[in-house]
Length: 147
Ligand SMILES: [Cu+2]
Image (cartoon, rainbow, N blue to C red; front, side):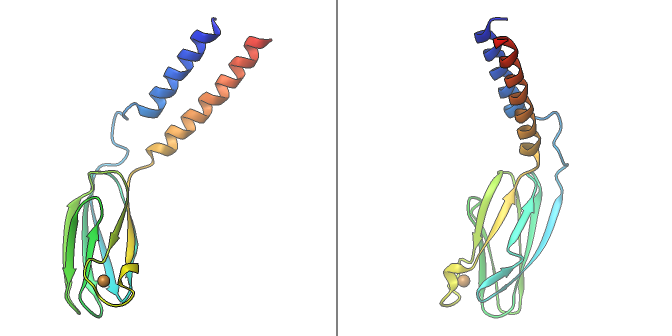
């Protein structure tokens, strides 16, 4: 086979593995409920992981002063009064990693009151495995052509 043609074929296969949509979503969207305790100057839990399409329900509970929670990229927020809770509901329709932070000045260390929301699924793991296998296959192919 023409080496240039096999290279082209090989690259096309790579594109398919990397970008073809999966026939079905890896996991069906579901409602994900989190309780986040807010106190000066931290969230607990501070790292949330959901799948794209999930409905995220965050119950923010403030232990001391008024705290807020604002999710970067989604532009949604909620505020909880001292000793009270407040609920934020949104659909995680954008994949990626988003920072959430307190949007109400709650004291000196307020800017450090942050957390992370990760929206995604394991798609990339399988795709990277596919790409790695393809790469190995490509190396074998090129060695054979030289021989
Ligand atoms: Cu704050």
